[in-house]
Length: 345
Image (cartoon, rainbow, N blue to C red):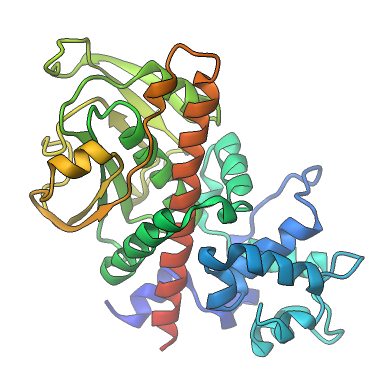
């Protein structure tokens, strides 16, 4: 992978001003996430590697609060607190040495990935919100996410698909939530070659509660009218189109997939060179080896199935969706930042 090819996808910091014209994102002027969130996004995108690392999210927020003036500008205390290196800060802040709201907006818009602009509006807004709560990711999942981010950064090549396979038992809840939120997170952070898939060890069916949880944040899910092979239980196994963004002529950055319950080794899934992410304890135990995987990562979550048919059902499915979405956003952010550092060497 050459530096020139990578730069075509990510750009370099020195070209921020020139890229602003072609990459500017049209934002709803009535929508304002607020001074703190805007500053947080600026640090995630342009801050030091340490400050942008999701593992340090709580500390970064505390330091950012100290560097944020009453008028919503970031002062040069950001340099003292290691939120930004001096060169980056002064480039963004300009002659007055204060990073103002308009300057943050311009910098963020200039570096917003094209694929983020194609996300469905409600999906994009939900992902925006999840990026503000990385402190809610527990240590075990952060450690697993670190491994996945490193694998992505080591294997990502512009123009060449890179697959991640989420595996649970029934391929009805956690694996589909993980794959869908992973695909949306990859689009959000501009990693169009990353494609997420799902599979199970004992396929059943795409659970209706999973569909409800994804539709609640704007993901479009429509039945294809076809049924896939049934699992051991014999339950109907309809297939669905799952869409998280607008279509494009660029086949490498598709924003939809066909989902149905299937074995992780099904022909619809990648057969080699992928990362297998085990999102349930049972599948993790049953599959010490995943055929064809170049990396296997244990990342178990509790099954929201335990809350089926209770008053907490919808809340728990939403909780699991957001747990997985938050972690995938953290993973994709870290992978992108690592890739950019590699380009800068």
